Image (tube, rainbow, N blue to C red):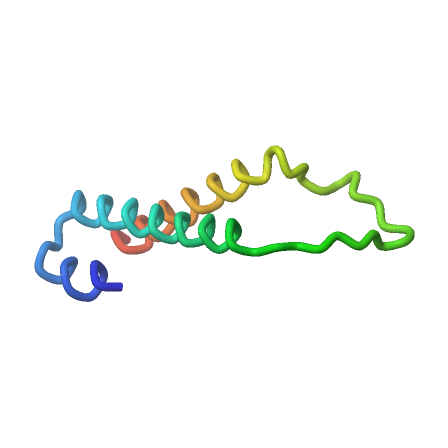
Length: 81
């Protein structure tokens, strides 16, 4: 938030907006990874539930990373529009 409200108004260049969007995306992604590393889950199977259509845990980090990057670039394009 500091970058958006304190730095970007003084530097209205596109390159600064791109760098700010990447920094914000990395920060948000890092906070999500920190939160997920701190949580503990207890597994209890649900009768009749099939996990065939879900993302396997092996690829979950890639799904999160790609979604964060796409959201960050969408944010940049909204700022420059």
